[in-house]
Length: 117
Image (cartoon, rainbow, N blue to C red):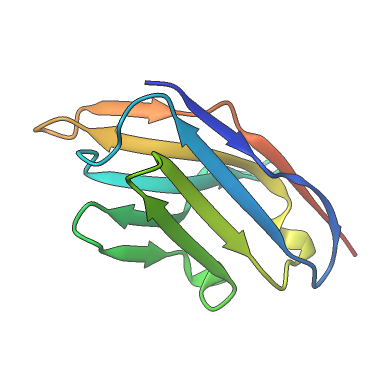
């Protein structure tokens, strides 16, 4: 399974971006689809995730500003990012977990988001 992100770019503080993740195969059976990010000199961290049952999780730092959505029919996952802050600057990665034991892990190549102050 290939995951391809798009939608990153340069935006000013307070601006918005919408990230998209296109999967090469059907994702309806994926237990969870999510977005992670890795800022300069930081570890990769979970930003938001959406399970196949509809469960949604957000990092505390993005609650109220980011929205994850999952379109199983189109095999797409989106991350709407509003009120962006410089600390949101990072490479954003799409992630998928599948398999009975959730042992099939897939990553995209990442898309750069830069928020200028």
